[in-house]
Image (cartoon, rainbow over all chains, first blue to last red; front, side, top):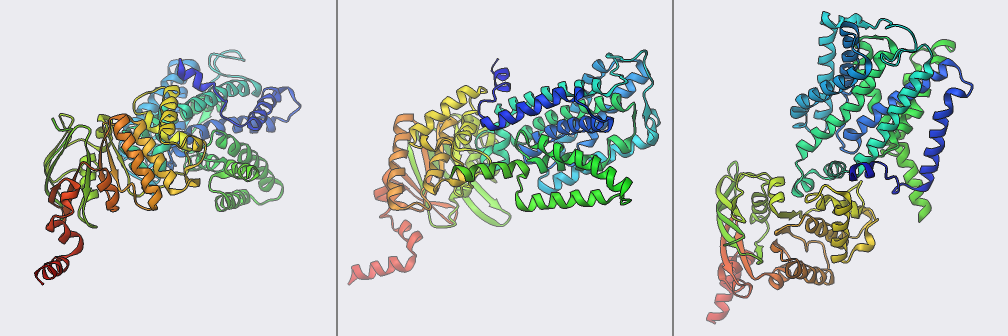
Amino acid sequence: MEAIRNAFDFTDLPRGEMIIAALALLFLLLFPVLPHSSFAMATMIQFLMFSLYGMGWNLIGGYGGQVDLGKAQYVGIGAYTTALLMIRLDVPFWYSLPVGLALAVIWSFIIGYPLFRLKGHYFAIATIATSLVLKDIFEVWNFVGGARGLEIPLKGNLPNWLYLQFKQDYYYFYVLLAMFLVGLIYVNGFRHSRLGFQLRAIKDNENVARSLGIDAHWCKIKAYATATAFVAAVGSFHACYNFNIEPEDVMSLDLSVLIALMAMLGGAGSMWGPIIGAAILVPMKSYLGDWLGGKAGMAGMDLLLYGAIIMFIAAVQPRGVYGIVEALRARRRR
Amino acid sequence: MALLEVNQVSKHFGGLVANQEVSFALEQHEMLGLIGPNGAGKTTLFNCIAGFYPVTSGRIIFDGRDITALRDYQTARLGLARTFQIFQASGDLKVLENVMVGSFLRTGSRRKARQTAEGCLDFLGIRAAAGAMMADLPVAAQKRVALATALASDPKLMLLDEVGAGLNKSEIEGLVALLRRIHSERGIALLLTEHVLEMVMALSHRVIVLESGRKIAEGEPAAVVKDPEVIRAYLGDHYIRRRQETKDA
């Protein structure tokens, strides 16, 4: 299968990048056995989750250039599907995961069809709106627990692989790391695929893309649905990891914005961008937020600070941190 | 049977008449020039044929199929490749990737798309630029990339909108030779609009002249340039009058 060969084909990447990636992977694999605090472990899990969110966002927001500020609704769909199936019907995680994915993808087609008739800012605003409407519905819908959300009870003895319930965080870490690697390989295949090329052509110039036989509207919807699958899968995981979900947590505008910001900070439209963005912003958010809020007594200051960093990056290099790396590399070649 | 038949096509934008009942036919393997002064409606007609605009009235038949109601991406799939007058240098894609977008119209395989694209770059003599970014290339090379991309989509007919614009004399000569090769070696029919008259005259088997949205003349290039209607359209009434006066005197 050529698609599989494409997914494992990293040969077009510079060697330096592959060495750094291999070292990073080694670090991730060994992280649980290295000495670490439980706070560091929680931060690493957040990093992996946001990397995956960002990889999903990047498919439509980066390669497709469609700024999507409504990814949280799909986190919610994934998380709620898994939680509800687990609570009401005792369905294990591994079965609820594909159900959540399917529901999220169906929803993405339903709203994607009208959404992608819009362009630019109008599209971004509409994605916010759909996400907020869904959140509002969930907050008043008693069947899904309303604003108080859902609590997943323990299902038998720990560790429970079926329901993804563990006492120690490193179980969650490895499950998520596996999802992360699958996601990364998928993105690598996507960027070599026909859809990947067509999306980048659309981002470049939609009229030229259409003149080459590309149905831009349909292409965007397909990429949007693919992006959705990433986000919903992590949402399902989040429900099991947290045992507790509520709309404000999994469907908030904050989450949508954070997903987009991390990917943009790292570098929209590049494979490593979302991972770089998450690697910078997640630790900063948790450590700086913890320090500023707790010890320095300036809760909320961290938000200002990373707002400033994002503005700085946006002014210096719109293609994010990875864009800076590429620019430096290009200069060295000259 | 003609490859492209344009039948009484009109395009109005509100009260503005851009094309009025234009009819012409383009034969298989023909190189047809579409000329006319600024604002004559050449680009609009292109946009109507390619399905970029819906026509107000009239019919367009391509390769035996009625394509009047088809959208731009659908006509492209049938083998109608259109290039743009203003070519925007792309940000993200390298030259080879750009051309591959064209070849992906006919295959889902990256390997095959790449082979086709490399073949097209070779054909247009810009293989060396395969790894460059579009924005880093000179205009003449960018135009060749645009041609290579259109060629990679394996068209039957290429609609070339002002490909000569912004090029110097020697670059235009190179382009003319290239278009001749595309036509003869690949068997692709060409419909070209042009400001640069030398280019259309050198290439076209026949020429259609538009003025104010209407067709005012049609025929062999040498005959068309002598047509008083055409001269009037390009140079104005006073030019004809003056020529008349000098003849009388």
